[in-house]
Length: 128
Image (tube, rainbow, N blue to C red; front, side, top):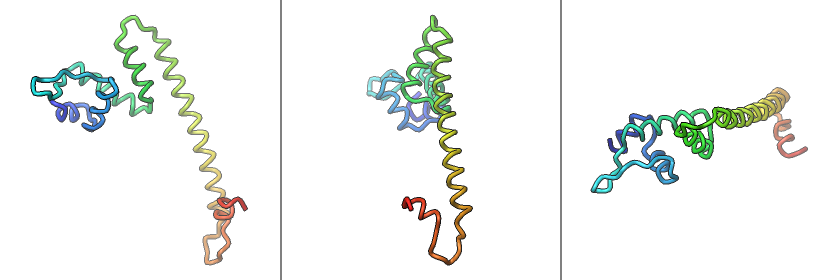
């Protein structure tokens, strides 16, 4: 299948597939005229990468996970280590976002939002 068909089948933009090829995550065959020819294993890799990216794994994590997936001698502990590290990162981001939400909610609640010029939101942003 060509790149457009592979993109539709994998639910990925063509540009993303080209990028994945550029960085060596997928290596489709080339026809005599130079067009990419995607086979079933390529499509499987694209689906794997799409799901991995949807879960927020970095490109390097995706590279490592794909290599582990293709390695029949892998240890699941290696996969778990990558996933646990990513989960820790996500939990840290959630904590940071909750703190931001709490701070902003406090500022919004303390602002009268009326015709007066004084505004605790602007005071806080300016460091006053």
